[in-house]
Length: 398
Image (cartoon, rainbow, N blue to C red):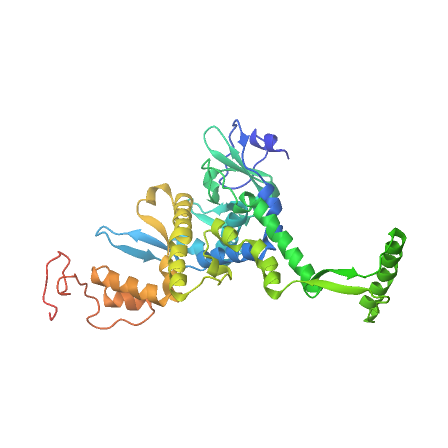
């Protein structure tokens, strides 16, 4: 079924799907899709994509409700909460999120199709589709998505579209496509280093003699040496040089070999494109404890947090009913990011405690520790006295 015949009224049998006659224009460059598999064979690219996908994909995700008193409560029995824990028969939550995020990192776009809804309109199933299976179509009044395996074109409300940097606001651009030359340099450097190690880090060598050789002599020498070298490689027989012929190997030092293996992979440039600190992907040449800690914080702030906020916004738009969007929202709990960073977590808890945001029991709950009597009070900076709900100072002994 062709794309135009699908738009203009032929069979569409997906639940909740609306197909309208539109004037279409296609966007995007699928060259990044072509390069994705090759790019993932580059260690730095694989490490960056895996790190980002694992970091976001394993964070807790909840449905929150805004209460009249301004507080927020976690809701477990909402249809969207149940969906997020098991989006599809094919994926658990973490696997689904990893796939969606990895697709965005590699191809600039991650797609999931809302395949089923209940009688009230809540999504009950979301299927992930590879970027190569989805085409974005800009219509007159909406953005549509062509899903090749299903031979369907669906409106934007039925697609979770997690996009990377998108100059047009519609379709994301892949770091792989933008770093094509860098990727090729990395691949060539890796190939070069493998060949060097196969030869025990030796490159070519030089044969020399004190005798003057004419053109015929050089030709015969190459022929003779070629046979001896082939025999030496297969049998291990040493090469015996006659008549003053000397061999001087051109051998790389270990430092030079490491330069070839790592310098041309341009870890800094590739990691920078993914907004990942180099030490997170194995480059420890300039790493110290203090700047690694700072790098972790920058990674959370500059790379992970914007993606979390974008993903939350997209899920809020597509999963909740229009009538409840002001009351319910998705919360991807970024606080889990600080669990492995003791110093950052401690400083953050202290700051939240001193300004009255967290009580002792709030902090203990975040650490999966039991509450204790008297631990639910909130404090203000003035002499660390507790404050009631009306911001009145009260005696801490009460």
